[in-house]
Image 1: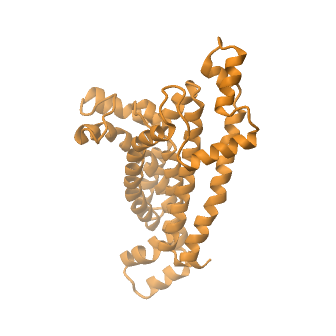
Image 2: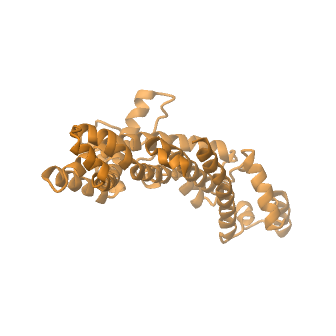
Image 3: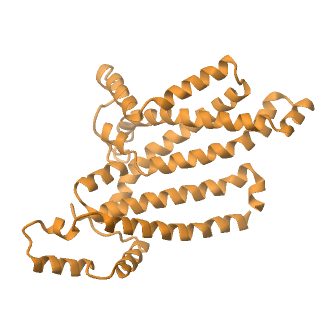
Length: 314
């Protein structure tokens, strides 16, 4: 078990290094001169050259990357050219907004989808299965932004139960802040439940066909115990992988939903930095989101042995 974990952790180091190289290279391929954008069209060549020297842009690309990576390892991702704030605290503040919504939504969706997929697979091709899969397909097919707009119109404008625009941090007023995140959470739960339900059903059907399940039934083990002890743990790993992918994708920024619900999250910050040509913030966001993907995949890999002990000895 320990050796498995150490191998997985060691594999993340070159992955993160490649991610940093990709982010650095991608930012250098963006057309336009960042110094020219910062100083404006009226800057003379001397000012442009001085600014490039101060920012280290006159150095070779390899030197620029080494300096940037050394600063990034210490938590220094630069300073925003728009408001002069440090990039990492700005990203972390916005990420906290997105993380609360995403983690809550994915947890609720998993609690609904995994049992629903298990029941659908157990009642395969019957009315229960058709009803669950029909509902999952419907939720999967509805665009999240459209569903969010419908919920806003119904619960915000018509019923006036929930606020339509704005955001209040839960650290300032928990009850008021909770009202602003209910609709985004419900939107994500409805959409992601459809994805996870179909994955749970497919993996459960594969496990139900295996010989040890037939053997357990032949021994007279109760069906509920067969599903709970023999089927669910072995069928959960593919669903766990999907949960990890969904978490990585959503934590990278739910830009569309954050725009619909006017939430100051990470995706909104990335969009704003693109329009403002704020390269330090954009570069920091890309690096941060890529690291989130890697860390989430590492956590998922570490959870595999909990459901399948064979993984730890491979």
